[in-house]
Image (cartoon, rainbow, N blue to C red):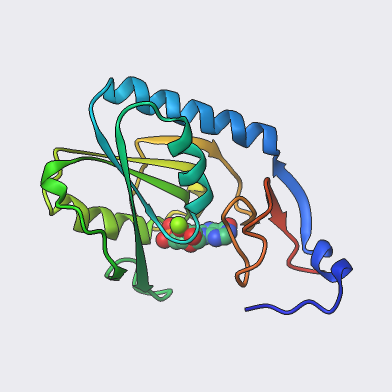
Length: 185
Ligand code: IMP
Ligand code: MG
């Protein structure tokens, strides 16, 4: 959690808009078009890992025209600087039997890649009919495990970013754009 003494202190944390609301909304439309053309009428299950991807999920699912269900999960990772892969615990699981579904993970950002690569291993182990990962943002410079999303909408530099679902200390998720976080102010 984070506390701000004034609205100026809060606003001072928003350093620079990296991706505007308009750019994000056109990426949302593009995501839905990619899904529609890949699945061509076949029902799918959209899955996202809370909380970061909740807005992307909401926006994309409104624009998808193939039959779709939505499901959410939460995951807790236990990593440190020396161990680059290992433990991820699913703290809230999806209820669907994945063997019945074509699964599409919608992710907010792939950073080190550790959380998602572990979650993907777990979900693929449940034998879905097919499996793809779509991420809104990709920070390849930060990768510590070999992980590549099937579709990535924006590649960004190694900045800590906030907005459009992404937080710092649980704040800023509601910003309609993606901004660089000011670590100094
Ligand atoms: P990972 O390092 O790829 O395992 O990323 C795990 C999670 O950390 C992501 O799904 C995000 O929720 C969060 N995260 C990574 N980079 C950022 C960032 O720049 N801003 C806010 N959250 C981030
Ligand atoms: Mg995430």
